[in-house]
Image 1: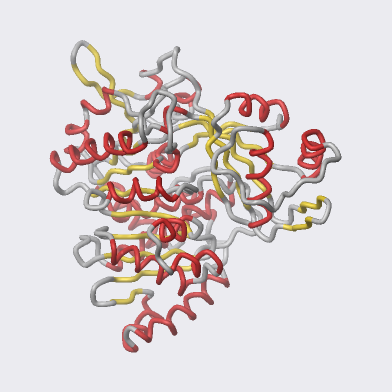
Image 2: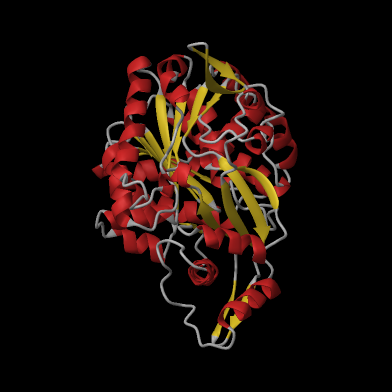
Length: 473
């Protein structure tokens, strides 16, 4: 990371008045999976019964068998994914069977807020659904994170530690980190992973409803006036049915009304939606049908993109799923851009990142490219150190890392492919990593490679935080 980029990022951060982060904040309980441990658990569950571990996994987890099916799916298909736990007994079963773990901040909004605070953004306004003592303590080192609290009829902005409610519970998300080279050998099934993976199992009713406190809603207009950017996330936790009879559409609609209030109060505020892994295609449609026309920008990874395409019956879905290379992912992202009204779509992968943006989006292409680069550097620093890093720490940790050879090669492949749109612009893309497609602007960067990452969870969130600070200013 050059000194020029460090200085530029620091200048940008100083220009940002505030950023709003919502709706999913929780506590991640992280467990590093061990081969013998998994085999022992399988033996206890199935004993000597024949099992089909290659069958499609369930859409939600209601039993230990469901949990195992989802975990095996992630390992066997090398597709990082997340499932909702519907049965509290499964949550207790996980605690009993996987005992070695550590706790850290979780949730897209929680992670991105933490990273933005680490950058030194002046004010980060956060919606925390359950402000337990454990949750608040995670933010103890930051004085620039605020939550709205009502006192004597007034809304005050307080540090999370000053807003703790002892009666509120910890919202726990189980994160299983699976290292590269993890070997699964059961009966006729044999697989050795070629890349680090993660499997997330979530037992969290509040975040599944995109819950936000009345105080946060009442402060909406005031916060929007003080903010350059807002983040909406957590929609991947939606469920099809709820015990109280509510519907996913109702929960999404409530957040859309809140986002509209931000935009009414501050027409210049940009709103970014960070997508997450969703199995249910109907839920994907519920979300995208509603955020279209309200959200300015959307972020996703290479596993999430084909599922969105599939939800809308688009032929690009199969190509992106079977072969997630730069050309297929570009075409898939472009198709989403064409059918929706978003001003910017971003895709982040282990080896590269790309954005497709409209000329309406008031971020210059060179600034968007800098955002992609800094996002990749931020994610690499987290992977290499296991912690969210400051700008200076990123500058110190990342220079020793190489650009992904796959990412560099995929740029060459994409450059050749872009000639079908424009030979001259494809040539320019080779040199500048910016392609003017007439109706869209494409930017691309290879990622930095961390061969043996300390963590894999939160990398997309770190990337997004890095991108947002460059766009927000």
